Length: 417
Image 1: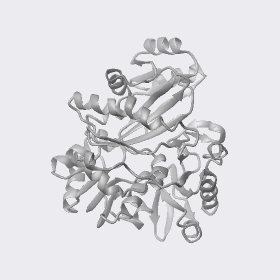
Image 2: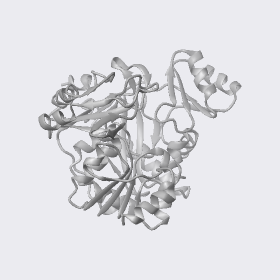
Image 3: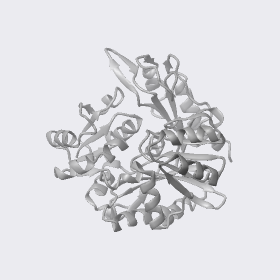
């Protein structure tokens, strides 16, 4: 089949890499892509938020499947436009993508579906904000209701910081703090059948020891040696299937990738948030472990025939990804800096370690930084300790002036026996 992937980050590079290794994929395209994706797919320019333009490109390419990576095009209804053109599309409708596009909508769906989550208030006035902050107390959890590229959430003990963030949002969700480790669990669904992937854990804070500001994610690993073996079954029964069933009941079926961000609290599993697409950087480690060819699964989801797909199969290997970020990220990152060492990683570390590009572009013969999170260095190994060792060895070969990365990705999990 011919596949068109929409997006240009490390998540899309991970998707393109997996699709390029699928024998059923005869042509692979990506728009707009990046310098790394160009090595496995033909790149095209398109406004990813323009559904008509994306559908037109897919038609011109005679694509058999379109995969929409980022959340903003999904919330903008790009998948609807592609489907309206008669082309199968992996990604929820604009209405269903509100599950990520509006925290308040997600809370309403969870309440109707009986999905366990934090108690919360939706606030639009200073008085409501003060009342909610006072009701829950510290630590304060303040979430911008809309899309914020992974940076709309503030968790702090500082009341003034919490209030300032809340007041900067047009509409805000303030909720109780959930204790316990966080887990990301993806599921592929056609709106009825739900196929869970393997759990992963990511690292949101910029600095080692979970210090510093929130980011889009500085690394991830899978599997989770400390997690209950029954976790996936429990989340399927209490979170994923009820949510998919509720959205179908409302007449806005969710077809695509449903991402549940979970807290494993002292009172059980609770949903922190839903996303309507593959997460970044968790996708990098989840797809590194997926043995089942990807294209057919995504096409079945797009066509509503996922019930004919057997359970997914997984490699026994562990996977770790470490994000190399630009100078000053997650503030205003510096761009245009040359990146070297990529060929060295390819020569010395493949196939166990490889680099997935996020914020990069070509500048003549050079690859330069073009965003905040620049690269995801991903490695597999017999266990997390070996995968970590390989990932950090590869990171050490990469040179990007002013770059930063965390040194403790998956360390605690790797040390568990």
